[in-house]
Structure formats: structure tokens, C-alpha cells
Length: 365
Image (cartoon, rainbow, N blue to C red; front, top):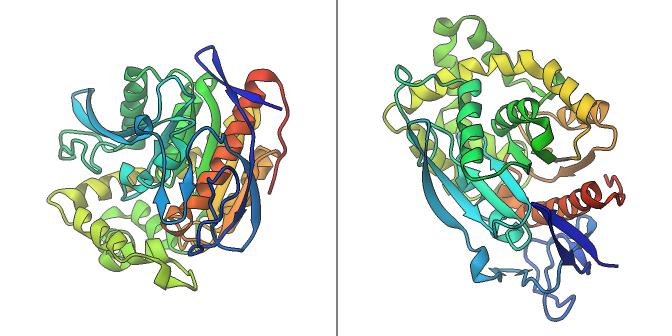
């Protein structure tokens, strides 16, 4: 039976066709429907409704309509140049993607073409990150409140009055601020290794807590813990037993970004403000309990910073939350992007359709 996706009062038909996903990183493409197939690593099987009229993916290559290619733009917001990536048609449901530390919208580069045939995706770089303006801390308050204010104004400028959130790491504090300020605007939330509960903070946070308590004394240890080349590699690979799956350019590029003039001061300033996020966890949890937004939690279980307990804790607030643990690290899309794309699309298709027409969806684990 066909279902409908709605955007701005307009509906478009979706013809559900089942694709079997055998999660295999290096398999030959297998036709599954009308010559369009996708096969990835046999760790689990997952089913997703995919519109056969939209050219999708095959192993080693992506096929999608020219209109869904990613564009790279800059928008002036609150006196800052905010760089962003944009994909999909603007009449599709909106998805706002918020990146982590010390990444940028670049972390969504592979994911966006996989989702853009069905969604309008926008991924900004925060002030101080990526290609956006990076004023010195004396000229700009590097706090999560301030960054959320810029992102909120940015989304309004693009006409995104109702959207789903995809948040990773630092994207969590930014996204929860948007959701609490405008809960009626949030259609769904996808969390990828972003913490909202104390038990999600692993042993690496002991040094970070000491920095919050005595900033001057612990500034040096914090740099080694958070912004050193060793920390960059650890952030990606974590405890994954297959480190050979990670491209070393991931942390080499990250290290080069953090070595740019002024970056250390910017990141230390913003991370000092992170303590307020931990203090705000009860407020975020209260929002989740009260509003019960459709919630998908995707979690790389080899993350050295955020524990698996942080993923399951979301169920206390949203019992219907979909939780998927991945054989991946903190940036799960480093190695599991294809499966994450299918899980995310299936979740959004079911939940947004449910919200619009009253149909139900299951809570797969």
C-alpha cells in the first residue's frame, strides 16, 4: 500500500519496495529490484522501504538525480558567514544535520546524497568550524547558547519552520536547545553518539571535568585529551578491533584544522562552556519526556568518549525510541554510512508519515 510524505501541506506518494540489507563492506552489487540494488556487511539484516522511482545506490557508486546533488553555499547570519551543504528538493521534508567536534558539515558528505532523493537536507558549519567565519573569542562568545542562536536564525532564513534533526556529538547540545526553544517545529530527532545523560560520559571525561573545575591548571592536560593528534585518532578509531577500516586522512585533516591560527583558543573556550550542557541534561530529559518526539538513536559502540549506557538511557525518557548499536566508533559514519543511511531513511519515512496521517510504526531495536 502506498504511503504519503508531507511537506508544507503537500503530499507525495511513496511506493514502498523492500530492500534486504546484508551489511557487507565489500560485496558485489546484487540486483534486488528493477536492476537497482545495494548489498553491504553480513552482521545483521535490515529492511527499508525505498521508492523504486528514485535511483539509489550500488556498491562502489552512487546513482541519484542531478537535482539531488549536494550544493555548497554561504549565508550571512548575525554578521557571520555561515557555510553550509544542501541537498534534495526544498519541497521535501526538511532534515537539519548538526555536526560534532571538531568536524564540520563535511562529516555528512557521504550521507547526504543517500537521503536527498527523499528529503531536503541542510548541514551548516558552526561559527569557528569548517568554512564558516571564525572570529577570535574576544569578538564572539563561543558558547553553545550563542551557536544555537546562530543556527536557529540560519534555519529561519532558509524557511525551515518544521524539520527533523540529525545530531552528532556537539550537534546534540545545539539541537536540544533548538528543540526546547521551538518544540512544535521538530518532527523527529536522530541522535548519533550525542549524550543527554550523565552515564553516557566515559572515563575520558575525568580530565575534562577537572578542566572545568580549574581551567588554568588543567589547560595543558585538556589539550592532550581533546585536541592533540593522538586524541584525533582516538576519537575516530576508539576501541574498534578493526582499525584498518579507518582512513588516516580523517584524523590528519582534523589535526590540520585544529592547528590553524586561533583554533586552539576557540575550541578551548567552547569546551569550557560544555560544562553547562551537563548541567542542562535534566532539562533536555524533561523535554523528551514531555514531548515524546519520534527518536532514533544510532550509536557506535567503540566510542572512547560516550558509553553504550548513554544510548540506552534515552529509553527512560522516550520508551518508544529506536536504538541501534553499530560496529563503529564515535563518528559511526566513518565505517557504517550506508547502513546508517538506510536506518535513518526507514525511520523518517515511517515516523513522519505516521505523524502526518495517523498511521503507526514499529519500534525496532
